[in-house]
Length: 455
Image (cartoon, rainbow, N blue to C red; front, side, top):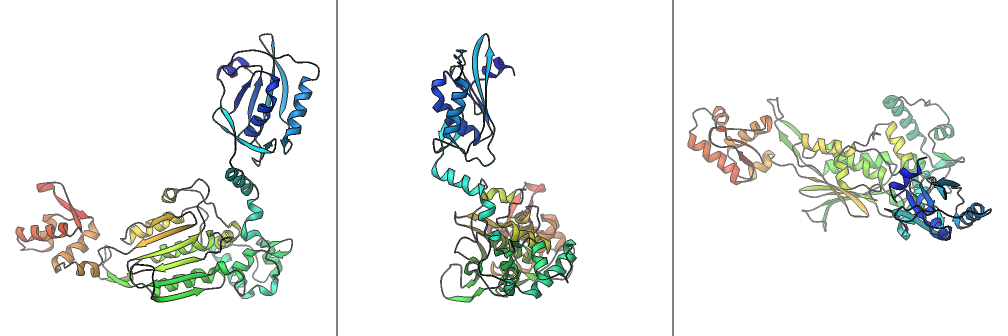
């Protein structure tokens, strides 16, 4: 190792200098901090400015220092403590490896590295580290459901699942296999006992009150009574998803649209059904089942909200949902089974699919909101449907021009005249300016190059 080069770099997040062995307590704190990040080195015999001082190393110096580290670090780790020489002077090098769980204490307290300093972790930071270490044990879907037995499992639902999973993903479990064997192969048993995931997926009756889904159709655009429709859904996660979508579909309208490249008009729901379904699936599978709150599906006159109790993965923001991202399921055991039957995809693209579906449906992108205790996806009502345009007082020419605009993306004076041969320039100008005033389109360019696009 080139000590001169290492020391010349100065103290950093992974390198600290100590002048004497008398600073062993500070060194122990730094060992905790290094172990709780990516590891590091402590060199004793160097001033903070990088000046070579050297230390006197007696017969028991290294052993005494090693014992002090061992006695005051928990859990016990074994940093490498060696004597080194540089320009005729003795140094002590302590090399610390990164701890696998980042929960190393010094004198009963956790430390972390911030720049060139070792500082004590806050209570919240330490608790998060503990939860991260034990996340597999704490995950609701992996926990054993006390008192549950195979009698609580709906065998017919299991058979449906196996048949669908074989068809969709090629799952290699026979539909004739014994129930206990099927659940074991799906890892839905812990030490021979049913997990919460098994009951969420295949339970005959609802075992967990928080797993219910509340569906509400409000009158107007405020979450207040009276309700037009209200339903509390119970059952397994597959039924919850399907019934929640059914609730939405019976509480929204169908609109008449002229699709690009087609002459005949067609009916379709005013919201993209696949996007709504994806949001519902996400809420059911990624929710925090340790929270007493329930998934909510709220339908208003002009928008829909899907409420998911829980929070985003650590370090994520709602903006990340609009970008390519990895898949970090809150309930991985539950998620895996929904993957087998193509209710979800294991690529982290669910929110992007929702966004793209909305774009294809000619409605605004959904809004993602993190309240700290829940994630909310909001779908705005479709814009510029025939019904909406009629309410804005458009004449027949403007209505037809809007259909042309949706197909081509833009319209100009010339193309407007092509739609209506014999129309005067004055009428064209008046029609288009009326669309601008009503904030339906906006004007791009000047004079001959001028055209109009949807606002």
